[in-house]
Image (cartoon, rainbow, N blue to C red):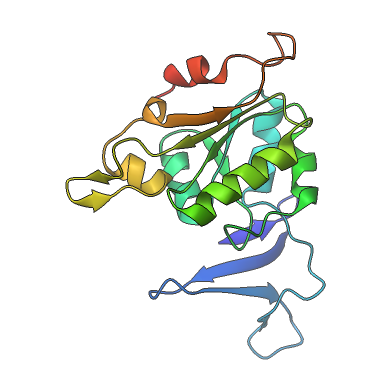
Length: 190
């Protein structure tokens, strides 16, 4: 998974192995392989940063999830999504700056680390984003014997974007044109 700066320049990659291990590397032409396997001194950015910036400018909802697999599932559903490198518990305060006046839906994984991560992201965006909602996968946690934990599971089980279950939403103390009822808006998204 390529992580880039605002202009699309590659900063680092996250590689997922078959055993669900995640390794990170940066381009390094001084090495025989062309890569250094650490992020020492490398700026961390959000996944799909240029797309996120453009979508915010266009007034689109930005979906924040826990990992790249979920970002890809949400993109296939037709929305703009992002995540931070490293997954749950690795959100950095500086990521919030990107979301100035954005409308944000945070997809919490259905486990304690995922729910804590979603609350951390929401707290970081409080006072920055114009509207924030935390949602989870629909269903009772299982569907056809399959546990629905995250956005990819939710969409993979045939649920639609509007089927995400709202678990928290920001107070609507901003003017209505700046903080629309996000859930009503999402109900129209498929």
